[in-house]
Length: 311
Ligand code: BDR
Ligand code: CA
Image (cartoon, rainbow, N blue to C red; front, side):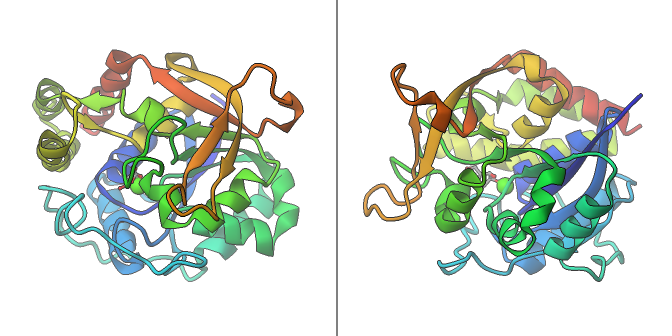
């Protein structure tokens, strides 16, 4: 089977960890490297969590450490959203594995330059590393198949009414990425809030009886309890895993073309992904496919299958 080469760029994070678990379980994917960025936690913790998740799953993927802070703003973590460790109620043994010597930007450049085929980038945190890569090494653009990112929202925010966390954390970087001319698939809140896991779903994942199933269920349980307090959903959105589901199974996701502009000068709308769907817009300016819906049951089945596969 011809595999799809991808590089994940993560700020692990509960849902980043689920995205990693899903990606590494899929035979269709060749995860070349996982790069880390400051976001949900400091760069030290997102890197540590990423290494621990990969080791716990018994996988071996190079991890490269990336940006310590956004391009312009200061890094701001919320210890509440993902729990103290960043992995919810899951407690993983710490691995001795270290990140590779190359930093995230260098690692991405080397992989892209040396790849005979185009590679898909999958960022599920602030877009700092991707923006720096495109600035520092614009020639690698020709080796990027597309960018499938978790971030933004055409019709809703979660940090405030207008902005989603990953984009709001580094709007200037996001603006660079959305203006890059590369094909972008935006898995924002419009779709990820429909990709939620209920208590029953989490139980299904746990009942797979695998270590991965226990880990994912423990992590998601924390997220679920947070959502119970501050969300209208009957479960927790497994945001970041939607990117991988899209790459493996695009037919379970609905997406429509749009021109997305990241607001980097607004006061109330700073970090907002203003998405133009007007039928009479100049479609030659469209720069993204904005995902709006997902077959939730098929998505959850994918997560259950992922947990089962780590027997
Ligand atoms: C995004 O913010 C982070 O907290 C999650 O990991 C996800 O990438 C959702 O807005
Ligand atoms: Ca994330």
